[in-house]
Image 1 (cartoon, rainbow, N blue to C red):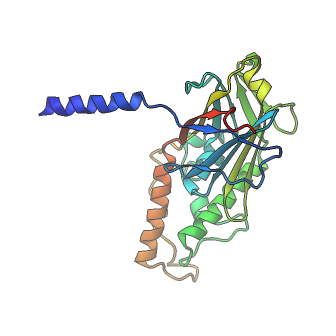
Image 2: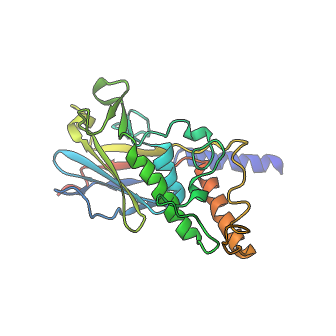
Image 3: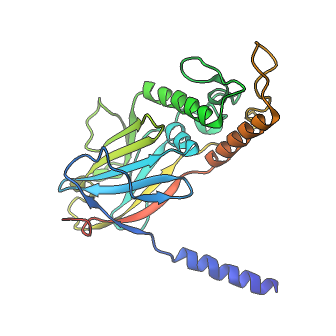
Length: 278
């Protein structure tokens, strides 16, 4: 019976290894897709994504309202890989944002003691109270991390383009044909835009199909992280005591978010430039 199980399992793995990547057409556009809503959706990371194009550029748009994915992008960095052979290989890539120094080996907040975003409130100094909902916690944490991101130099690491092994540039200061931007909307949606010149990517090749990889960094739990929001709020300073039900909801929210952040975002798909051209 065990032999039959392992045989079936091996056949299952073999079938998965041979599966092909989904192929999406690059929708045609003549303008920067500021108001576009990405049409493809990754259910695991809850990231929507889409590639558009015109005669000169490839446009990539990512969008997510999932806190764990937003944190992985803002704190641990995001790499966009492009493979002109459409074989899911990291031939050329750019990383933006670049991970916060030492963030991968620190606690949830980026501090050694593992405190900050969840406990300290928003950038205006407001602290969570017993009535603070998980949704309000998400907004405060996201605003705080996005503020820290906005205050850092906007650096991008480039690898493999035009024979360049690897280099890091500062956007707005150093020249770059590849343009990227991150915006946080009023509805707490994090939008990621990238513009890649077609000639810079393909060079003299006439390929119309290529692979795109969206891969983030992730959080590495350490012994000092500890359980988040363990004690709740209350018992001092005149603030109302949190109920056991509210404390359980908040703890569940934080634990789920942290668990998601310990694995990277990884989305791969193929793009067909020709099929979407007018």
